[in-house]
Length: 115
Image (cartoon, rainbow, N blue to C red; front, side, top):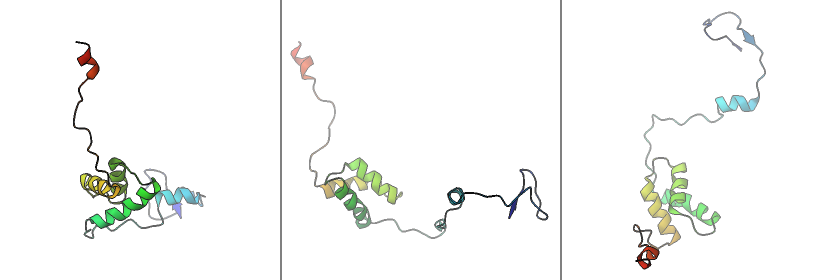
C-alpha cells in the first residue's frame, strides 16, 4: 500500500510514501470497524415502548428521578428522530411527577410592601 502527495494523481508505479506505520487507533478513527448504517433502507420510527426501554435504565441510574429535559436528551441520543415533546411526556409518565411547572412571572411581594 502506498500514498501520493497532494496533487499527484497516478494509478501505476510506486507512491511517494510506502510502508508507513500508523497507530491502530488513528486508523479506526478514520475507518471504524462497524460499517456505517445502510441509509437507503426505510427506517421505522421508534415506538413509545422502545423509548420507555431507554428511559427506565437511566431513571434507575439517577435514583428514581430524571428531569424531563435530561430524559428527552437520553432518548434522542438513542433515537435522533424521536420527538422531544413526546420524550418529555414519557419521562414525566415514568417518574410519576404530577407537579406543574412554572406558569409565568410571580408577583414581587417585596415591591408590593414598599408602597
